[in-house]
Length: 352
Image (cartoon, rainbow, N blue to C red; front, side):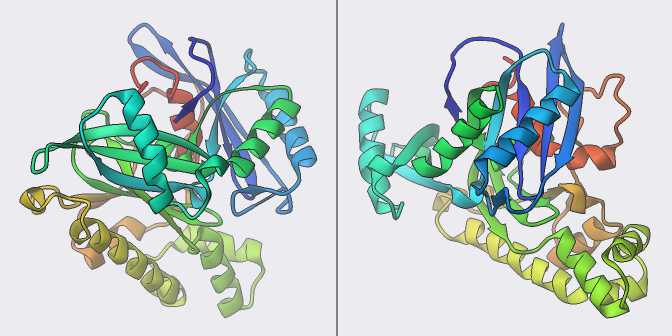
């Protein structure tokens, strides 16, 4: 959402999470886009905790090491910001000029964000005109300056130049949603330490949330119930997924918790005012797309589809670009969704 430099240049997408950092570079050659570089580094948990940078010095060193390994040929980066620290709100605003709208949104933000507007970075995007009221429907995004400034400082200390910043849910949507796909979709980013839920409608992210459900929690439960090490539990999970009865029974409480969270978000969007009343049936969420490393759990998409009574599919990380000559599987690429989306941000074809 935040573009600091309004020029064209090569950039890397940089995804910073609690347990690892990932980077990817996508270049446009002719009419096609190709993956030209990617990589990751595991980091210690004390560096980043729930999206907040805790050790700026150590994290900047790890970022620098990653880019030295990749030799990207550019210092410009597009960086994700933690959605768990962000505030998104859809507003109804009277038709007015962009300059007037900027002032009005800053004023209206006080009604939705529990922080002084002077302590926030704000951005917005006009989604559409509401046919019922003849107003703009506007998506506002706000993040605390103290969070964003830490990310900026860390990137600069690593020797890189921050060109763009946006919350990871927007990058994920850009990576795995076909730009021609207008179906209202719930995107589930089932990650190692958390799960992100993203409602994508009318070509934009309209709602984001996160849940304390993760691939790691499944692994820990297996280890506890079977009395085995975490590494053996991870191997058991990868081999069996939830297709085997024993594995399903062990993981069932967490899977049921996952279903409840998803159902809550489906209901929240479908019935709580996101959709104008005249369009409610037409614009309900039509499908679920899952991504992140946890999306590779065998039988997971089928389990969700059967219990939610809605089509569920694993995302295609190469839907908007080619992997080129890189030896990266679809399964591994799903865990790079955020980095890929950030890398696509600067290509003219995808630029909002």
